Image 1 (tube, rainbow, N blue to C red):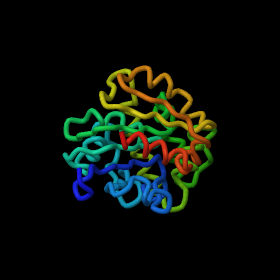
Image 2 (cartoon, one colour):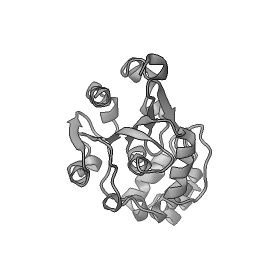
Image 3 (cartoon, one colour):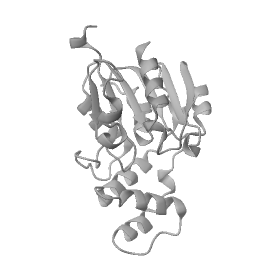
Image 4 (cartoon, rainbow, N blue to C red):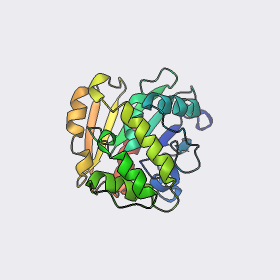
Length: 224
């Protein structure tokens, strides 16, 4: 391909973040050469519209419409990686290679106490459940739309992440921070895939995607 027709690289961020936060220009400029870099805000995040309480399949359809039919490489982190796993098999998305960073092997959202979370967001008591309290903390960070994020979580929980139910056929790079407990199961996920590599980089769940090692791993894998 020429520089004018180079395959785009699409980036999906994590929960309660936004594209510019997880994939900042200051870190990624020049990393992929002249390839177009498309940074998407997930529904209910950043500048993206909320979808309400809808199942995972509806979220995937919305992302597929945003991405379009042209062939891409796809990079997802955390929630973005969970969605990218399924987007790689979506009939309206053409993914050549897939990078999944900080991907949890399980489904946390079904364990969130949504009534307690909604009460806390509305000014009530902090949830006693640690996972729910963490979700509330993330949802209420400055700039986030807490109620819309909880709607998204409620909808995703109705169709939980079930990696054994269908796997991407594309080459996949699974990246995890060396100190990221959430990504501890990526070796097991790799065992499900027909063509997968696993690489660990410095950092925990928050810092790993901002390391030079993470960027170099993405660059090298997508250059093949």
